[in-house]
Structure formats: structure tokens, C-alpha cells
View (cartoon, rainbow, N blue to C red):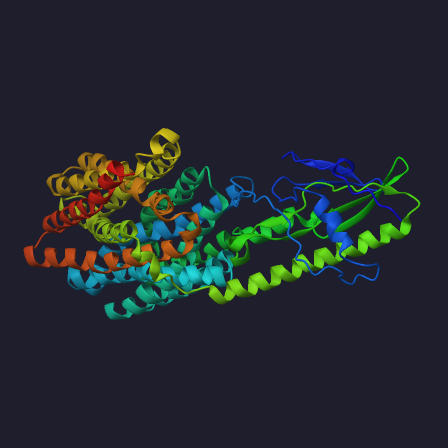
Length: 549
């Protein structure tokens, strides 16, 4: 029997809006805009001709379908729930780390050790969290960001709880420094990774909002830590803080994998083959869904499907041809699935724990060393800031309040700069602006020892919080500018590994300065010097890029 396969008999709608398709039962199915479509439905007709009625393949030639790749990132929708979860996780992790200065004073009072030895507790915790960044990235790729955050929550809570039973400072190195640091690492990196996956055009704003939780945590948690230590003593305080760490599991539940998100959206469109009867003609409607791109296969998730109905008019009396076409299209769907499975297997084999080849990119390598020095200075500054305030004659409560002020401006800086960096006119200058922020932070570090009043510290720390929040929140944006979003997961793990090295030696070296000179002024001068060096390292490549784009 003859079957018409001309392009004129095929109706394909290429709009991005959802289509409302009516099947023979009168039901409606929505076909979403984020899927891929076969541009020429004659390819499906040719595919049908390659199979006989039994479903056996008759053609030796390979069938190729031309596909249009959709944007990988949803850029909204459930992405804002991801931002909420990441922001809450940053609130807890960042708030606890910004409380290191308060804890430093508590450890000094309890164990009566040197500033350098005591600073190792907070330094180890932050360093372990950051150095294990590649492992956290690998764990997220191997399982999911959701699994990583929930696992990290349990481990971190265990480490903090055990810290309450310590009787020697060296024991804190293991419980609070190592165990809690491992947990925080698994909960920290995946939050930024999955935020970068869910957003593209508004990535700067999304990352800024996600990391703004650090500012909120800095505002809320340091005064709370000071309060619970006064009310519940050493053990009771750590029991409460371990409960706070368990709340990271709630944040992890919100981290829906992008691949799962797309499968949920396309549930009604996967592997459907329907016969549509309309006005005395028989139409075949096929939707073929399969995973797309290496990113989708590796876990970031994306799907492709034939977006719109591919209607092939047939003689309504020719039901044999109907059956033949149905069998052919079912075989086509199976072939796509089989190819997809092979691709997934190959991708898993190629997956690496850490891609050190990324360090061959000069700009990325220089950025890593620059942020290493920045982190060493920044971590030491927040560790010794409460001690500096107390040494000026103010109370420990005032010292904790100073950190809260920094937290408010930290939040504003993260969101505001993230919003500004998304403007097209600002994007080409954001690497330069990002670099200049480092020199501004260095200037504040040099001025800190000169201030003696609460009002002066409040103003200075507000500026310090705004600048550091702006810098830290946009590091993933700079990575994307250098390497591209497809390398974000692996490169971010390497970057925070460098940060971990800086966090490891920054506070102890600054504490050594205090032990040698007897006051905290030299510690902040040391921090300012490291910050200047960090800016100078990154300034050369930034200017070179501006001259030779």
C-alpha cells in the first residue's frame, strides 16, 4: 500500500511555547519547551521504512537525527529552591566559621595555651573543609549533591558533639578540626556546584544570594555562640552546636539533582507512541525522550525529546501500515535508549577524581595562588578580630557584636555585587573590579589596629564585611569566565583546595606574630601584607586580558 511521506503532510511546530496535544481519548498532554526536537519529521518516516512488520531492522545505514540542544540551566523555577537551600547551608557553615574568633577566646580561657597553638583548631577545621574540596566534588558527581550535603551534616554534627568532651587542646584538633571539617567540606562545595548548574544568565545573582547566607550567619551565630557558652558552659554549648549542624541535612534534602528535576518535568513526554484520529485520517504522534550531552550523562541532567507532534497522515483504512509504523517507532525509541546507555557507561569510565590538567591554564593557576593568599589573610583576620577588639578594652559581648555588624554588610555585598556583575556592561570589567576589591580589603586590614572605640570598629568592620563578602561570593563566576561552566565542578574543587592551604597557615602565622610581639597589631599588619601580595599576583593577568582580550 502507498504511504504519503512528503514534508507537506507533516505538521511540526517549532515554537518554544508548550503545545496542547489531544489524543484519541480526548486527553491533553503538555509538551515542554526545554526538550529537544527532531527538526525534520521525514527522518521518522525514513526510520519506519527501515523496519518490517515484525520489528526487524531492514536498513544497514545508520539513522541520524538532527537535534537542537536546549539550554542546560533552567535559570529559575526550582532553581530558586536550590538557592534557598544553599543559602541556609551557608548560614550554618559560614556562621560557625565566623564564630572562630569567639571560640578562640573560649579555648584560650579553658586551655591557657599560646595564640599560635590555639589558632590551629579553627585553622584545621577550615583547612580540612577546603582541602577536601576535590573529594567533595567527586562525591557529588559520583552520588549527588543531595547525598553529599546530608552525609556532611551527620559527620559535622558528630565532630562538634565530641568536641564537648575534650579535656586537652590537641584533642580539639581531631574532633573539631578534622572530623567536623570533613563534614563541612561535604556540605559546602556541593551547594555552590549545584547552584552553578541550575543558573546561566542569572548565575551571578543566584550565587550571590546563595552565599549571602554567610552574612546572615555571621550576624546571628557569633552572638548566639557567646550566649550559649555563658548559659550552658562548655559541654552544653557544643551539644547545641552539634544540633545546629544536623540542620544541614534539611538543606541537603532541597538539593534536587538537575537530572532528576528534568525527568520530573518530562515524565509525561517520555517514550510515548500514540495514534491520533482526526477528521477521517490517522496520525501518529511520537515523543522520544533520552538523556542529552555529556553534562546530562554525568549528572547535571538534561533531556532531549521530539518536542512537537510528528503527524504522518495515512489512509484511515490502512491499519496494517499503522501497526508497521508503530513497531518501527518503538524500535527507534529502543535504539536511542541503547545508545544513551552506552554513552553513560563511557562517561562514567572517563570520570576522574580530580582534573589536574586544569592547572595548565595560566590564568586559573594564578587565580588559585592569589586566592590562597587572600584566604590566609581573611581567615586570620576574622579569627583574631574579636581578640583585637577585646585588647582595646571592650567586652567579649562587644567583640561578638562587631562580627554581627560585619555579617550584615557581608550579606549586602554578596547580593549587590552579584546583581551588578550580571549587567552586560559590567561583565567585561568584573575581573578588574574583582581584583581591586583585594587592595581595598588590604587597606582596611592595615587600619584595624589603629582603631580603639566601638564605633570605629563598627564602621571599619562594616566596610571589611562588605568587601570580603563581595569577593568570596563571586569566585565561581570568575572560574566560569576563565574555564567555562562545564569545568565548574572540577575547577571549584581545585580552587577551594588552594584556599584550604591558605587557611591552614594563615591563622597560626598571625598567632605567631602575636606571641612574638605580645599584641595583635602585628597580626593584622601581616594580614594586610598577604592581601597586597594576593592582589599583585592577580593584577598582571587581569591587565593583560584587558589589553589582549
